[in-house]
Image 1 (cartoon, rainbow, N blue to C red):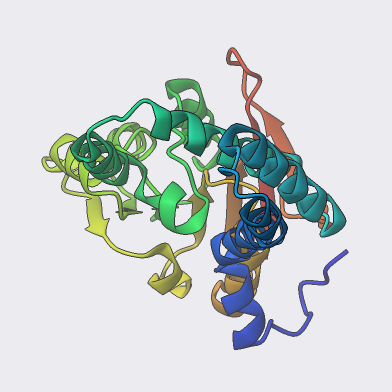
Image 2 (cartoon, helix red, strand yellow):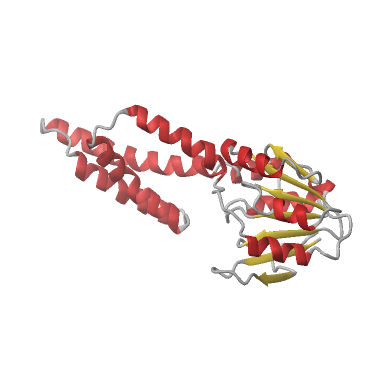
Amino acid sequence: MHSPNSEPETDTDLQAQNRPHLRQLALQCAAAFVVLSLAWPYFGIRNEALPWPETALLIGGVALLLASLTHQPWWWRLIHTLFAPLAWGIAELAIDPGWFLLAFILVSLFYRGAVTGQIPLYLSNNATASVLAELLSERPGLRFIDLGAGIGSVLRPLARARPDAQLSGIENAPATWLIGYLRTARLANCNWRWGNIWRANLAEYDVVYAFLSPAPMPKLWSKIQREMSAGSLFISNSFPIPELDASSVITVDDGRQTRLYCYRR
């Protein structure tokens, strides 16, 4: 369990946490290298073409083994297992490369966080926004920020419910940022920002809200410890901080029984 007074992580630790995709790429490349370094000489000596379907399956198997040995989460093991076979299968379809470029652009417009930082687009629902408004009703002059604010699904109703509050949202996916900007443009107490959540100064706020993913939570907690002042509140939708007991957990009465993990500084 982490202590609120524990030492902040070093820059090297934070950089390592911020580059998990490079670690996964290295594992996949290692699996391909192991298989191809054995298969190419073997079939080359026999003057036979490389059997790509079997080779792709073998690369997937080796990648699964490496991911398991390095204790990667189950979803990464699944991705490593399927990546090479699916890449071969798609290559066999002979799809025009332009479609892949278009797909990448569309994904980046809406899911930039998933591509760059393992933070998919999750949208908070109206029930969650209502619970937040009730939870924060006893904080006059509220200074609130939503990290990874999506399309403003929390900020917009909260700004309407709390005209006395100063609310900020920060988003870095172009399409979702634009939608959120248009939805909050007429709300005088709502500051909609384009930017990187890791560069936001959390000392300016007494409540921080996030609906991210399990991956960035340890790094985010380190940032909270460094920047948020005593008496402030961090609320995480669905994803708790590992090895740290929440001050309270609120269950939202919605279809998936959303849980809000509250951590008081």
